[in-house]
Length: 395
Image 1 (spheres, rainbow, N blue to C red):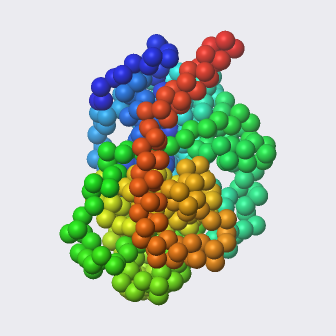
Image 2: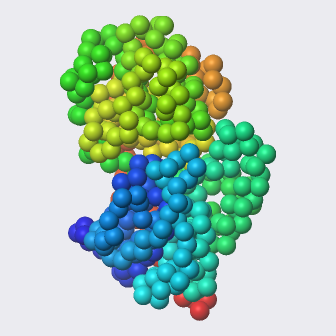
Image 3: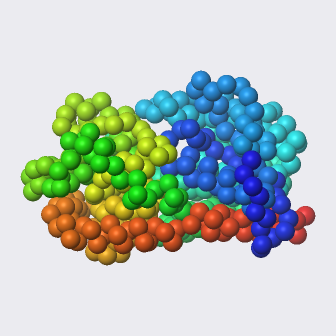
């Protein structure tokens, strides 16, 4: 268990239930955020009960990094067999509630487990915060089902509006959801571990392994799912233009996903290195020069501050984390949303200007140093206390 740093804002430790259908060692933004939330709340003196699906090949044993835990059966998501929906066994949820008696609940995902937990919390009078972590409604248009966007959004709105409040990672998304009829929307931003993600991890050995061992080589990096909803084709189109301008460039893709096999076949010169975590991931960031992030379906995009902390120049559309943290031309580059030609042009211009690239990289690191997970978790702690106190007054 982490060493507790009791809150200076509220003295009462809370028993909290965290419900999520993805959690480390699974590799994705939601899992990463949930681990930071759990650790941060524990460090501030709170007690955590974790409810999640049992992962594939995971032994049936107690996780001593949390105070209480309920593992439920899961079934794989279509196209993402490494991720699972949780099966909400109502009897198990009720027994967990009776045993743990949480003061408040955070539900990160809106799958069957999240919906079952929301029903159970409401039945027990437990105040609930829900997280809007994924733009599921936008995913549909990348899989030939754009007609489902509005029905999915309606379903998400109904789910979240049953809670005491919905948390989103950016002010822009808060405003968007509020306009769309979501109630009580607040901001749960994101931090970055600047001790892990740092330019100091730059590795000449790794660059040599990539074939990028001369000073004229530009290592262009993508980190994330190899998937249609990540706008992955624009990564390859952009690098094609960069490689014409700078022939010694290399494209490195860190991640896995449903489009991996096709992309490996279609783009044999790209380096697909698989999913990475921890220091190995941090070394891949720091050893690169330019970071491409063309996704248009993010609620945030944790990879953006990770890349910035690692001293990379990020090229992204003016959305989500990039909109929040990048001042274009100063600490990175942002382009008007969905303007592919402008995106490619901006990336090529950055790659061809080593002086400007150095300035962007240095300023990106300075920005990332202000993004503290401790401050983020303190804000969530205050929201937990607020809904718990409101619930006590109503009772």
